[in-house]
Length: 361
Image 1: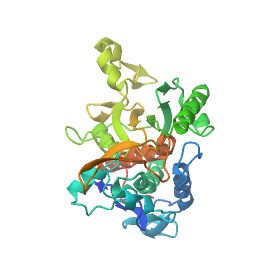
Image 2: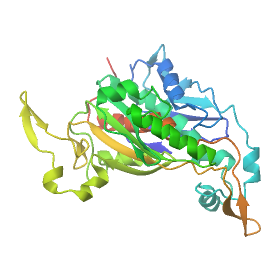
Image 3: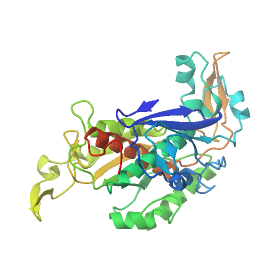
Image 4: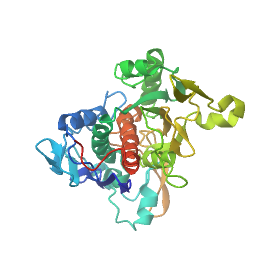
């Protein structure tokens, strides 16, 4: 449960355990530590609106156990956690031997011979992403010292696609609606589609786009530890993510090379690219343009609709209706999680490249 090589984050905890948290190794000493910023990031991950979100509301506030003194990082491992206080495991006791379709219940049961924590999905639950946000908030503090910004927004929900927006519109609009979409006209259509799914006892997924600005050239260690490879690995650690693309992504398969190549030119004495179809990465290395990636978020698999499964004890087919508190659409809450995972990877590669020292002054 660790990510990174120089900025190493180890995650711990389970959905219905005592807490979820993160231990960060390799964070530079002397970083001004903003605990309130961490809590603000956690709040962004909290349920946004009961129409689309779970009614399980955790009053998440970070508890810092080590690595910070007098408001600054000490260079020692930073250990942080948020407690799980609003927990109801009774529903999962009923489903312990009836794996929920779309969840990891069955493969986890086989892999761990039934010893896995099945309550709320254990380590496979979206609850673990609170720990991702903890570490991501610290990573953002580090990135801020280099004027690097990471911002994500919703670009698609249930097949409804937002029109492309500029970075200023994204900054201005994403927190003005419950789906966190910068295209305000399309946001209303997304909300209506979510409402319809809720009325039908169903769920919907979508696509989140993440943009990283002011990225230095040279991040990434090809051929294996490529920058997009490490970002993709981090994004796939988010339980709901089922696809990742960079730049034009799968559209590269539909156009000519002459259409997609980012041509070079000189602007104000600097070499720049006229377009950014590559999404800020060439050959596994950042090339100076904004990093642009997108993550596909699948529909929440816990549904109020009857679904077929198998009783693992009797080995007979049965029908279940998943009770409990679940999101109709997880996309808006996943936005700070996507930002966090991208930020963690960026800090790790920035430290590898030597752009940040072990002590900030």
